[in-house]
Structures are given as C-alpha cells and as structure tokens.
Length: 105
Image (cartoon, rainbow, N blue to C red; front, side, top):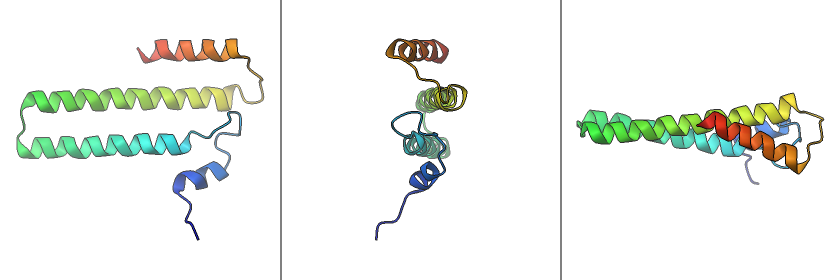
C-alpha cells in the first residue's frame, strides 16, 4: 500500500479550497525543501572557508528563492482566500498574474 506524502495530507484538508484546478501544496513543499538544501550548502561553504564570492552568490540565490516562494504563497492566498467563490475570466486572471509579477520585481 502506498503511503501518502505530507503534501497529499495537507491537500485533503482543503487548504486550496478547490478554487484552482490543482493544489499548490506539494509544489510549495518542494520549493521549501530546495531552499533548505541551499541553506545547508551555504553553511558548508562557510565552514569550509569558501571564497566570499561563492558565499555571496549562493546567498543571493537563496534570497531570490525566498522571494519567489513569498510571491507564490501570496498568489495562492489571494486566489484561494480573497477570491474564493468568485469566477474569474482569462482577462482577470492575467491581470492578477501581471500585478504579482510587478510585486516580485
């Protein structure tokens, strides 16, 4: 028998309220796991005394990844909590995505 992942269990709690066709929980958890791996690598770099340039580049990458996660989470909150039950057309959905792209910059 196949064991369900934590993301699948979260989705059973209707965290996305089925507003969108797919739940973002699994993708968000994967994104967080990637950030966690980057942070472990950053610690390793510092412990090994790697060049400041290498540490700075990885730090920048982690910061951008956090920003991306923050925007994705905000998008999900907006769509699943604020707009729950409101039918959006393609034009409105594109407008929301454009606004979130501006927020990410």
